[in-house]
Image 1: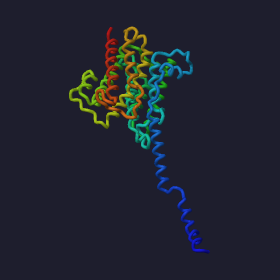
Image 2: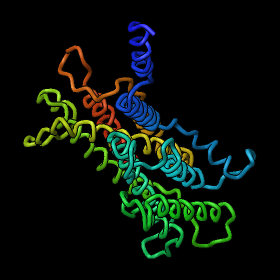
Image 3: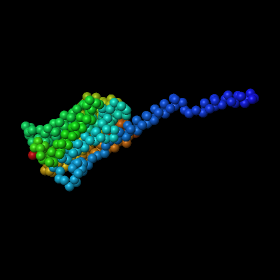
Length: 339
C-alpha cells in the first residue's frame, strides 16, 4: 500500500465527520426561534377584539325560539351575559391572571379586559340596585346579589379559586335571573323600565366616560388639543407616562366595547320610555360614538403623534369619541329627568 493511499484512508473519517448535521447550538437556536414565533403568533391572535354582538338576536337564541316574546329586561340581561361570555371565552380565554406565556407577556389585552370588566360590574350593580327594584325598600333578587358578588372577585387570581371560576358562577346567576324573568315564577325577579332607573345608570356611565376622557387627554401630550378634548379639563392634569399610554387606551377601548352592547340592549327594553321622552336621537348619538371608539385599529402599536404630523394620535381619536358620547349621555339623562 502506497503512502498516498494510506493517507486517503486516514482522512476519510475526518471527511465523514465534517458532513454531520447541525450542532447542538443550532438545534437549540432553531427551537427557541420556533417557540418565539409560536408565542408571537398566539399573542397576535389572542389580541384580536371580539366581534360585536347582535343583542336582540343573541337573546332570542338563548331560548331556542326566534318567535318567542321577550319580556322587558331579558335583552339587557342577555347582553350583559354576552359581554361576560366574550370576556371568558374569547380566543385565549381570560388573560389578566395568566402566569405563563404568551398571556404573561401580553399587556394590551389584559387592560382591554379590565375595561370590559369595569362596565360589566357597573351593569350588574345597576341590575341589582335599580332595574330590578320598584323602590328602595323592595326585596332584592338573590341571583343578582350573588352575581354582583362574584364579578367583584379579584381580577388577577390564578387558582384557589380562579378568577374564571368565580366569574362563571356570576354568569350562571345572571342566567337564572333571566330565566326567572321569562317564566314569571319568581316574584323577586323583576325588571322595571322606568325613566328614573335608566337615569341612575346613566349617572354612573357619565362619570366613567368623563374619567376616561380625562385620562386619555393626559395621554395626548399637547395642551391645545387637551383643552378641546374634555369639557372640564383639570389645569394641573399630569401627563401620562409614555409607557402607560397604551394601558389607558386599551382600557377605555374595552369599556366602550362593553358599554356599546349594554346601551343597544337598553334601547330595546326602554324603547317606550325613550319614545315618550323624545330621547331616541340622543341614544343613537351615544351608540354612534361608542361604535367609533371600538373600530378596528390597524396599527400594531398605539401611536401618539402631534398635530398634522406623519403619525396618528390614537389617544386623541379615542378621547374625542368618548367625550362626544359623554356629552350625549348627559343630554339623554336631562331628557329622562324632565317631566
